[in-house]
Length: 323
Ligand SMILES: Nc1ncnc2c1ncn2[C@@H]1O[C@H](COP(=O)(O)OP(=O)(O)O)[C@@H](O)[C@H]1O
Ligand SMILES: [Mg+2]
Image (tube, rainbow, N blue to C red; front, side):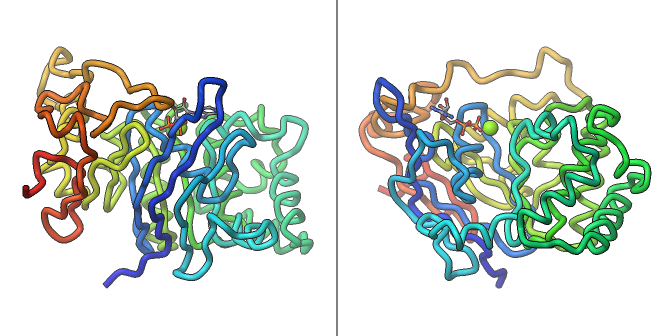
């Protein structure tokens, strides 16, 4: 049986805004198994980045974890850990490459100094060790360490910077990597290349990954299991093969239909009608019902239960509930 490295239980994260609370992550249950690549997919605004930031408690000040637990290795509850415990987990146990991190590299620092500063901030002062480890990681990501370490961020292409960020995230030998839309800002060919590198990296190191994207085609390519998120909720979880072959949630089905098929014409590519609900006042019942072609009365009134269709394949939908 695979072991759960991370167990998110009944997690609720709210952002305070003048109209009330944005229910960005609402009662989310999700496990990350040791050594797997878990894909998290959903339209922009589904709560994916909020979930990632909550795991390492890097949320902005207006956000709060209102409820739930985030168990790491079955013992530490990151939702409640004091700051000193979190400091031991960030970078050393779990590393996050935040969304849009490409622009976050300090333009006045050479790449080598990014590695040295990161190490120093976590109490590692051995310069030789840092440079050796950085060089090894950069080579693994098919960059020339000597040239790249001496460069300033602006001297590198987007794809090179993304690889530097991956190497930086892995500097202190974490067990788990959270990548939030790591390929979104890149052109299609560079995206492909980074995905291949990540797969290769995973094969060589067996590092656990949580890979976040709005692009379901990317999930098919890289992930072992996937979770479909919509409006702050997990709609469906399962292994990638099962969810692609037999998606059960109407939202997952709609996402699948948005992928252009290799043989199909561009017109076949459909986007999902309607927009994400207001998360300050979400609709009662299932959050997808206003856009769901199969919405029934119960969907508009009561939250759907989580139904296990077969081991590991979970769907949160009244259509599949035994009543
Ligand atoms: N700092 C913030 N203040 C208020 N609302 C926010 C903030 N950040 C995100 N949100 C809202 O939380 C919801 C989830 O956002 P996010 O986690 O960024 O989704 P995703 O990463 O899936 O695009 C959205 O409705 C978004 O507008
Ligand atoms: Mg995001």
